[in-house]
Image 1 (cartoon, rainbow, N blue to C red):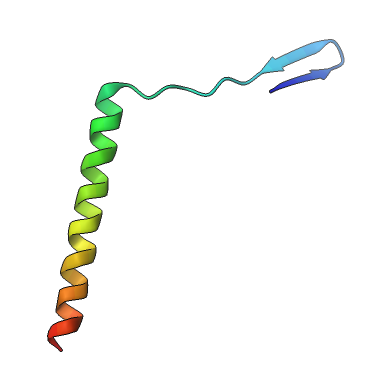
Image 2 (image 1 turned 30 degrees about the horizontal axis):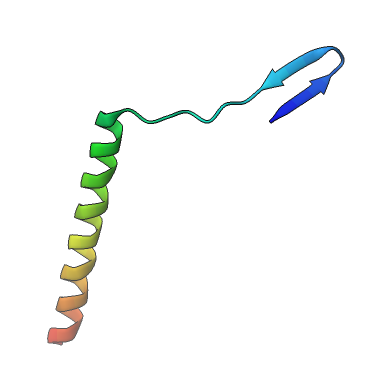
Length: 46
């Protein structure tokens, strides 16, 4: 996306995540799902 404002050009590029960032994000998602499943099982026991 490019905006031209008073002879000033601003260009925005989507940043590509590094392998380390991708691995970290996957770990967060797995932990989130694990905790969500744990909470759901606690409600089923009641």
